[in-house]
Image (cartoon, rainbow, N blue to C red; front, top):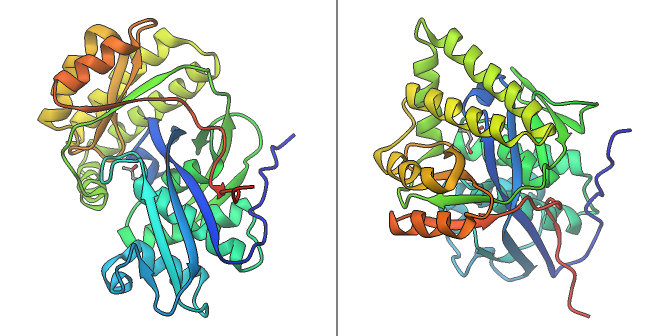
Length: 325
Ligand code: MEV
């Protein structure tokens, strides 16, 4: 039976909402070109607080609409005729780090505004959030917005069972399916190098347009499909091996970075496997700690200059924050 994810219920302002960040285990970049991706929502989150105001503003900035494309596109998508609002956003997700900070901001804001306009079901929240993020970035797949709306482990364009929902952008359609969480602890670490997702996606698109592009894309697909099956079987050694193979492909398409490589070297003695996560060209790594070596892994990454976080899959996607009782 297909899992029914709860809708965002109707509410009245003020409304507070939250959404988790995300971590891509296999298939970033290739997913933009239709290949499978496996990712999970992480237990670092963004919260937004929305209340009526005399002038629309974001964190006190009354010029946020022209300056902040994610904010302005979210308003245009779900609040076009709405009265002025004061939006405050707070986040534990590092920005421009490949951990889903923009998707979480968009999904939390669309959830809050969707609630204030009569409620919103989850597939619509996922599609709207994707349209907003895609509109602001110009390129990309619905992977990030899917993860932060769906929660837990999810596959895009792969995985078992019936789709939870599909997302279309005219030229392409992506299917979203639930994947069983193997129950592991993961470590992500930000390199401190901010990057532009749009630039990285464009440069990989150019790389994949070269004559060996189709064969590279086929290898991304093969690794992600094998990774999905290995995660479903909770086969750590196979997942570890596939993380290294995926990293090698990401190097070949030019989105690793010297700081990412340093973090991967620092992680190696305490990790079963590791790779960059997200758009790369800076950003973050994800590592599967060797059992019992979680603390050593975090220490090694911090000593190498990274900003590490121990993360677990957050089972719940975007939702409303309950008012205090
Ligand atoms: C970015 O988090 C993941 C990419 O695959 C882009 C996307 O899917 O939108 C690089």
